[in-house]
Every structure is written in structure tokens, then in C-alpha cells.
Length: 147
Image 1: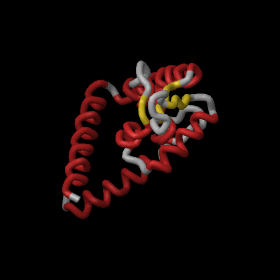
Image 2: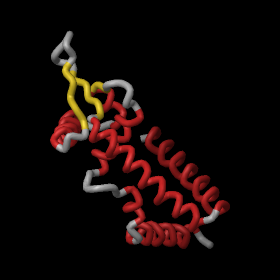
Image 3: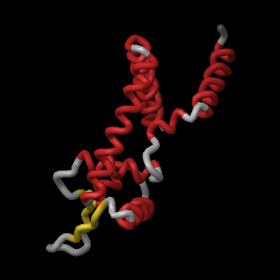
Image 4: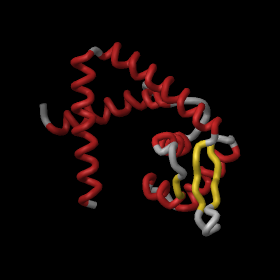
């Protein structure tokens, strides 16, 4: 098979994957992708408060974007802002009780969806998919470094 045929097949399979609504496997409630990522990061660091600067660095987003996401999550009572008593310019965030419960539930639901997918794929195909996705992410990470 020539490269042009492989390229055409790759394009076709990416379109099929997008149209299959595969991305909905991570859909929980009505939060945006960035809102979910913030909650996941906060859940991983739930024992401590996190500065907005550190969150922005982890997500590689503009300050205005982070502020908008945080405001929305705060309005939904999923996170709380904490102002540093020593320096009021420093603002930290932490999960609220509702935010913690949400992330626990979302993680459980996501894991159940993945377990069903693994069962459908089988052990060998799942391992092969993991290998191929890892190789793909390595490729795109290297490309990003070159640019």
C-alpha cells in the first residue's frame, strides 16, 4: 500500500472516529472540557490549595481563560477561591465539598465506561491500542518541541 493510500485511510478513520461520538465517553454532566480538566487537576491535588498561576502553567492557558473557567466553576459551587492572608494579591483555589463529590462521581462513571470499552475490545486489542496511542502522543509531543 502506498503512502497516499495510507494517508487517505488515516483521514477516513479519523472522520469515522469523530462521527462515532467517541469523545462522549468522557462526557459527564454539562461541563466544558476545560472545566473538567480543572476539576481533575484539583482532585489530584485536593489536599492542598492551588495557586491560579500554577493551574495556568499546568493547563497552558491565558490568565483570562483561567479566570473565566474558575468563575464558572465557583458559580456552580464546585470550587472555592481562597485569598492569601499575608498577600491579598495571591489567590488560591480548592475543591468545594460539592466539587469533591462531583469529581468522585465523574471518575467512577468514566472508569465504568472505559471498563465496558476494554471488555468490548478484548485484552490484546486494548494493549495494542494503548501502544499505538502512546506512540502517537510521542510523535505529536516531539513535533511540538520542534516547532
